[in-house]
Amino acid sequence: MNAAIKNATLDNISLVDKISDLESQLQSMEKRLPEDKVSIIVLSGDFDKAMAAFMMANGAVGMGMEVTMFFTFWGCSVIKKGRKLKGKKFTHKLVNLMLPANSKALPPSKMSFGGFGRKMFNYMMKGQMNTLEEQIEIAVESGVKFQICSPSLGTMGFDDDEWLVPVDVCGVAAMYEVALNARTAYFIS
Image 1 (spheres, rainbow, N blue to C red):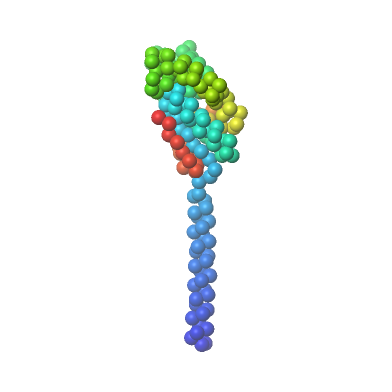
Image 2 (cartoon, one colour; image 1 turned 180 degrees about the vertical axis):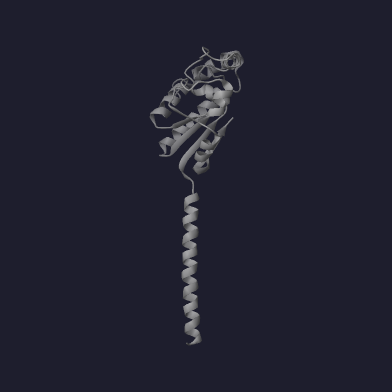
């Protein structure tokens, strides 16, 4: 066989192998690409931080993205129905008494002014933007998914039926499954 033909055949085989290898690499990379999802992890029980979390969530839904919010520890107060003490251990009652009962009782992170700060912010927002409670309602109606940290339930003494929104009680692994596949992940603390 002519050397030139032999080299051309080897080059073609090599080229076919290279293309196949590149296609395989591309498929592997496509599997790892983030999806049009947003993950918002809410640790804070502060009014302004909860507002920011829900405004980001509702904005992302408005852009066609799927949103999952994971609430843990103090952040759980944001989506509680109210204060429930009946049937809880003494330590869980104490924790629940020290935490805000629900979204309406959340203090701002700055400028609390002994409880007057929240009233002032509500007054300033009137007619300018939706209240936190309206933001939560919009998120529910828009299909935002809500996760509650299972270890937080046990530690803080929350029950499965204390939530304003439909929740998936799960652990950190479920939160990571969403966050690691999301295009954007926020941690609100």
